[in-house]
Image (cartoon, rainbow, N blue to C red; front, side):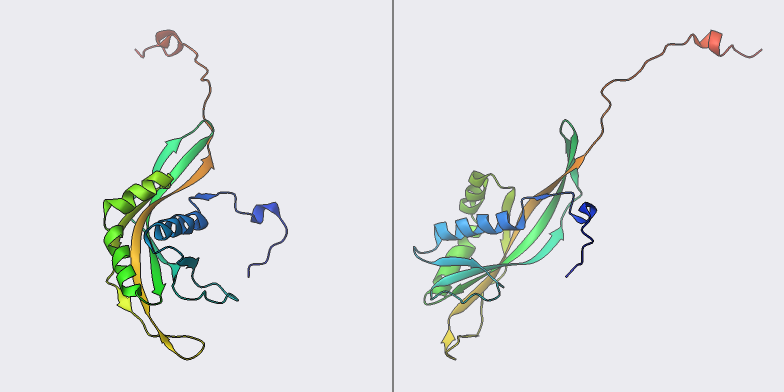
Length: 186
């Protein structure tokens, strides 16, 4: 935990867009659109939260990597800095038929269906690649094995931060007669 002196200077002066929450919401919406009806999709690594009953899916961001140089655009009083980042999100599918459902996830992530879906949301997120799918041993609270298939989805997200920027609104111009002000040397 970071201690704060109560100073407003300790607060983050800049907001990153889209937020991590918005990225999770967008990917969750896509998963709900392609997985069977009634399947729950939750964010992984949540403390004090019992897992839902099968079938369900988890999402966990496991990596961020800068993939290009920043870009800039200008507003009336701001400079918007855009950083292209590759975000990797691990998806876990629990329950019967999860291997077939994972096949749907990987096939459509690599397809225009996912690109068009995120484009329709207006979020700067573009699917890139997937890892190979993996079956992991998962033992529930009753010490029974359950089906768990995972895959890592990579996506490009263009993160933006607005920075205050001063601009000149006018320039004072003074004309000088050069030969009079700076006479040529002899």
